[in-house]
Image (cartoon, rainbow, N blue to C red; front, side):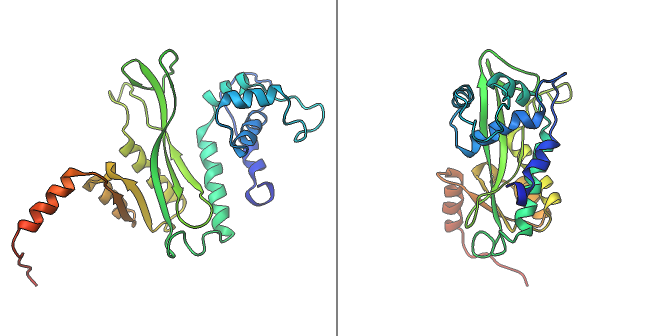
Amino acid sequence: MKNVFDIDVGMRRLSDGRVNPTYKTNQVILPLLLGFLLQIECMNELKYMLKGNEFRNVFRRGSRLPQIDTIRDTLKVIDLEKLKAILIHIFKNAIKNKVFRNGTIDGYMVATIDGSGLFGSYEKSCSKCLTKEDYHHHSSVIMFTVGDGPKRVVGLELPQAANKENENHEGEMNTAKRLITDVSKACPNLFDIIVYDALACHSKWINHLLDLGLDVVIRAKKNNSIKRVKRLANKLGPVAVSK
């Protein structure tokens, strides 16, 4: 990771909005990265790993590690654009090292987009929270490769919360359109097919991807409207086609 993907360089460039912090941003993020590599299930698990000094063989003797409250406070105000830059850099290095020279499915480069909830609370909230009744939460839209080879996260976007200019929260669809546009600019002509679920089964999404030079696959399971269209089409007579 260090020699091929320059993770250490990217992490040194990270910053956040804390004032006079005891730990630099990269010092805070490193234990979290190790936790992800160990596939921790929750922040509480990382909390007990830090308290139990389970990373003592990874760091130099006498190194002070941030505790879980510091990590949480940092994540609240971290610069997401620099995190996205690390993702794109890792992905471009994977391309440079010919990780995807045979594509991911039958020679094609295929990626999928999906929305995912991150965390929420009925009590705590911030200015960027999405709110549904009394529940405040954050969610994301993520794009990653599917098929053969390693599953690489290509990019992510957070839906924008309601503000003075927009009365409603940004929907998953618009967030996905921003995401695919940014990825297409960073890695032009790389992906052949983008897969999305039935949420994208309409012309705005299809035309948006076609304008970017991408083919579209939409999975519409248990969709009654498609069944009605099929029944109606089967009842129609031959259609004349002018040449």
